[in-house]
Image 1 (cartoon, one colour):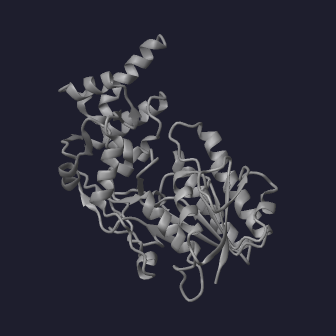
Image 2 (tube, helix red, strand yellow; image 1 turned 90 degrees about the vertical axis):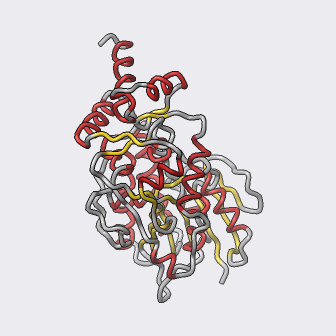
Image 3 (tube, one colour; image 1 turned 120 degrees about the vertical axis):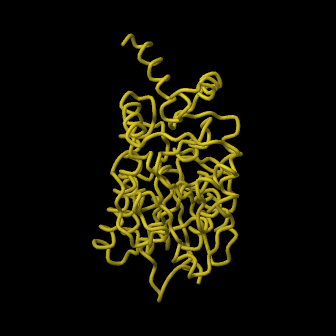
Amino acid sequence: MTRTVAVTGAAGVVGGKLVTALAGCDEVAKVIAIDLRRGAVEGVTWRIGDVRDPLLSKRLAGVDVVVHLAVDWSLEHDPLARSEVNVRGTQTVVTAAAAAGVSHVVLVTSASVYGARPDNPVPLLEDAALQAQPDGIVADLLEIERLAQDARRVHRGLSVTVVRPGALVGEGVDTLVTRHFAAPRLLCIRDTHPHWQFCHVDDLASALQHVALGRADTAGAHPDVVTVACEGWLEQGEVEQICGRRRIEVPAALAFATAERLHRLGVTPAPASELTLVVHPWVVDSHTLRESGWRPAYDNTSALQAVLEQVSGEHAIAGRRLGRRDAAVAGASAAGATAAVLGAAALVLRARRARGH
């Protein structure tokens, strides 16, 4: 069976990898690549446009499967503008797909929607409750999850699969997790036990191909939810050994209160709730993919090494990138400024002085 597959956000990192793989697949008759700009991949049909365009359904005529990757993950963009792209864009894609007679839509959120909690089972099952706090980018992802549920109820002829990757790493990925490893010391909240699990963008692209081609189907039906990540996890001590970096322990109350204050002052890009992603476990088991024969190319060690190569030469504290001089001061101080979260307090004071407060 051959099918026509459309990929939104096709000029992005994951989108480019996916359309390249699909273009070379015998099971695919045609690949339609949709983005605001033309990408470098040849052998596919490029259609330039915005996924929020109400006329998107015309671009999806004759399409069997849509993989929606036109999602803004930037830590730096205005939250309202980012939500406009993420939520309204997803809603338009789903509605347009149903109107065009598309049979299967694949959406991508994150395993972070489960919430990083100290009492999470390790690993989380794919049907576990979504308990993340609706803050920052996670609020957009939870809304996308709601749109998927609504679409299954409203559009009876449309199957919707939500793919939830673990902490993404690799080329072009810039998140609170990747910036965590650009800090001069590894933040560790006292009396917590982090479990580190990653998902390389290459593995995400191959998993999306697997799902789009129906290889993850069970009894002829597309799955509602698929998680994707490296197998297993790393303990904090293993991470420190691989990084060759020491930890800095701070009390939870102090760390979260400081992180929240820094975010309110505009110093750090993410709300304090997202600090849980580097504190508590949110490990997934990728059950559906594993049972259907898919395997990741990366393990957690090689994925972490990819992060370290990517952030080499960069400096960040509490999720904010620093200049080399700031990083040197934060890394050399023997008092509270050496802690990743507390060290950003120096930036707060500098910013407030500059504003005359």
